[in-house]
Structures are given as C-alpha cells and as structure tokens.
Length: 298
Image 1 (cartoon, rainbow, N blue to C red):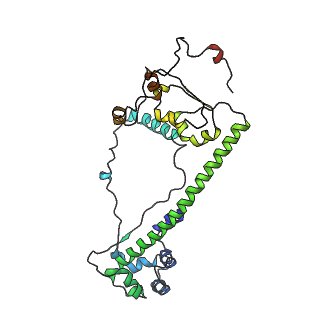
Image 2 (image 1 turned 180 degrees about the vertical axis):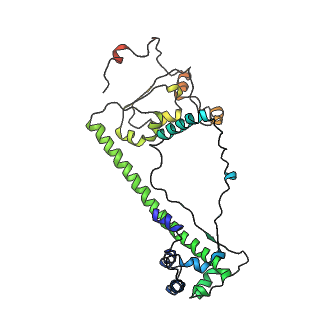
C-alpha cells in the first residue's frame, strides 16, 4: 500500500517507466524520451521535466492557512507556557496507546502541469497517433502530462483499494486470533472475574461474548447509558446486577438534543426503578461490609 501511495505522486526519474508499465506510453514513446534526454545530458533527472519545460510546470494549489477554520493560537504568558506544555505532553502520553504509529509518507506532488481550457484536442487520440513525444506541440504537453498522471493515479488507486481490502482482512484475522488466545488464557487460568469500563465493554464485546459470562454487574448504573448496558447483554448472561442510586447523578449524552427529545439521559437503572421493578435498597452507612473488604478476590 505504501508503494502505491508513493507511486501516485512520484515524479522522479522512474516516472516514464511507470507510465510504460501501465500501458499509457508505448515503447517507441518511452524510447523517444530517453534518447532525447541522453542527447541533452540530463540522465539523472526525470526526462519528462525537460520535455515539459519550466513554462509548462506550476506549483500545486495549497489550502490557505487562514481558511482552514482552525482557531488562532493563544498568546500565553511566559510563566504559564511551561504549564501548558506539560499538560499537552501528558495528553500525548495518555493517547499514545491509541495513536497512529509508523513512518510518514507525504502525499504531495512537486509540481503540476499547466493546462488550458481552450484545448479541444482529444489527448488520448493524440498519444495514440504520436510515436515521438517531442513532436507534440508545447501548448499541448501540459495537458498530455496531466492526462498521463491522472490515468496512472486511477490505476494505482484501484491497486491500493485491493491491498487495503487484504489488509483489513488480515487485521480482522489477527484480532480474532488474539481474542481466541485471550479466551484460552481465561479458561486455563480459571479466571472468575473480569473488570472493565463501559467503554471497554463495547470495545471488547466480541472477546467478552466468547468468554460466555453468566453474570454482569454494573457499578454506578444510574450514570450508565442504557445503550451501553444493552451492549453487554450477551446471550450467555443469566443475571444482571445494577448497583447505584437512581436519585443521584444521571447519565449524560454527547448530544444534548438526544437527551432532551428522546430521554436518553435516563439510564436503564432509573427506568426500571421508576416502573416499580422490584429492587433492594441498603440503609447501611458503609457501602461494603467488612467481611468483603478483607476478602482476597482472585
């Protein structure tokens, strides 16, 4: 995949060979470029550079930094600058596990060819009837180069998508293997208790379902969205235990209109309690008995 991305915008000495390999140039056209370039003594550069000439090349358009809708940088005082840098470093450290890793490969062309809208010549037909590329008029060369580059990108994009499908398949297969190994470890170690956050419950749902748990216990259930609880209702669940206070803090949605218009701010715990489902209240000042506090959970 990286080779496809690199080749899409590669404008080095091998660019004519890439066009030849894709069938966009014939052998005669390729040799006409190479022979003329050797005569001019420019063997190290891309022959298409001398064929296009400087007048047919221009810088690619860039997005203006003013129009990118990013907020302007805040003007921090020197005393608070170190504090903000430390906070940013801590945030990067926390997100490092989920961050993308790998080598950077820029997707950027060095130049684009100038084209004129007034050119009415069929570029494909022009290439088919011209064996020597140097016979193409200078006014048409920019359009010819742009046609070759666009067609090459289309072919490389198809190849990239094929590689991407294979990559996604391999990633899914690797994920399944990891989950199977984790399930075997749980059974071998005879692990009776698995703890996770509500986010982890949704993220590792396939693995947790493969373990086939019998009981699901959710703490602070009044602050847990109903959808999150339902995500943990596997087919093997026989007991659902919700612990919390239905008159305390409510669950919060990321979108306020869902919470107001569709009542998604009401947790499953509060909904069941308001519908008078049988529940047990504790009146002890301590949340947990001493006998459980001193117990060693394995």
